[in-house]
Image (cartoon, rainbow, N blue to C red; front, side, top):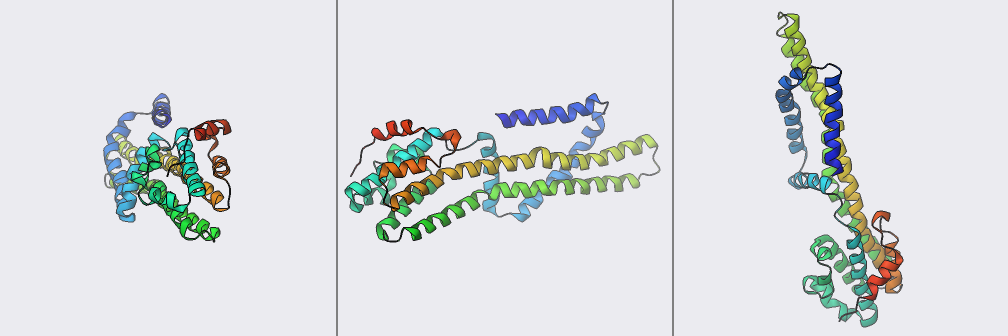
Amino acid sequence: MFQIIGIVLLFAMVFGSYILSGGKMAVVLHSLPYELMAILGAAVAAFLIGNSVTTIKSTLAGFGKAFAGPKWKRQDYKDLLSLLFQLTKTMKSKGVIALESHIEKPAESTIFQKYPKVLKDHFATDFICDTLRMMTMNLEDPHQIEDAMEKQLEKHHHEGLAGAHALTNMADGLPALGIVAAVLGVIKTMGSITEPPEILGGMIGGALVGTFLGVFLAYGLVGPIAVRLKEIVDGDGAFYKIIQSVLVAHLHGNAAQISVEIGRGDIPSSAQPSFLEMEESLSGTTVEA
């Protein structure tokens, strides 16, 4: 919502100040289609040249994320902690054999099915199950498992930021492409040097629209969207970090409720449930075979 308001405000302030100061929109509007074709078209072409199909898809999906906001909400963090509590409690109280059916086929697990949004996230589900599976095979070396989890998180986060990095690169290149469009406009003007001053003035103004558009698109639209997308990816990454915190605490021998409390402390403040909220949520959970 605020992103839409910001875009409307951006156009209103920039073009409003131009009009109120006596600027003529006719010059801008006349040149706009051609300058946009040269600048935005070249930026898209460079984007396609410089990125893989996976990154291109990630960037396109990133526009939706930038406007939709973070994926994980306060209730999702509560659900995640409740899920991890049940899994670790089952492992401690009933042993590895009781946990095996839940981590081998999470889609059929009565524990995972209680939290469909977490189950639907393939990385979160695989990350939990793979880590618990490693624990059952190598409980004697918690640091090795912790390192493996850290590498998984780093890889996933790096891949998640691909779209934001691609948009940042596009924003960095837009001012230069604006200069390219402006130079072409100057070349066109020089080819018509015998025209009257009023015509030459309009042609020079049209050429300068290219420089304006390059800077405007870079710092007014594409750059801020890239920053917003990075912020969302970083924020959503905290969700997976909670999984690491809880399972590492469990690895070091903590009780399930203590492990969950350690994980709760790592939740971003804006989405962090209180101790009492989590206590109420966990009191309604049961350990299943």
